Length: 180
Image (cartoon, rainbow, N blue to C red):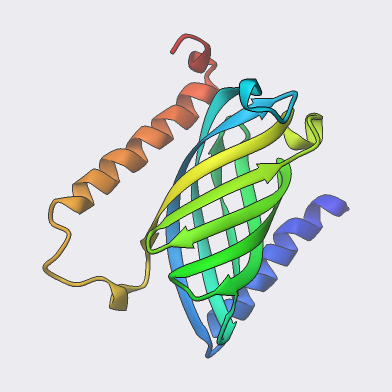
């Protein structure tokens, strides 16, 4: 029964954000990171990972932002994140909670870049990770934010990067990541 609450909560958040008249932005975010397995120290960082997330950020008041994301991840296959904090749509500091793997920590966003450090419990509910550090690049899905004649070089680069991450997910799923 508890497995149905997360999709229901995320669906409700997305539906609420979609119909609201507040400042909001839909996005795709490509994240690369590294995890400290079975510990929290710098010397414990040993496992690479990545995710391709879809989300929405909303600014309900002048200096308060809320966002939710869901997507595919490697090595955990799927992930989601709910965040709230201070700032604007383009520059903010938030506290994030990731239900799978269970992690909590700060997230910083400046322009199209996000940075986060999240802490877990080093057990199976946190996918054996004590700490996850990530860097992400966010691409807006709102058509009004995309100029027509710019990005001729950047679009193919984004596509190649997204395809590379999807390849990592497939490799991890097939057990090929142990060879790479």
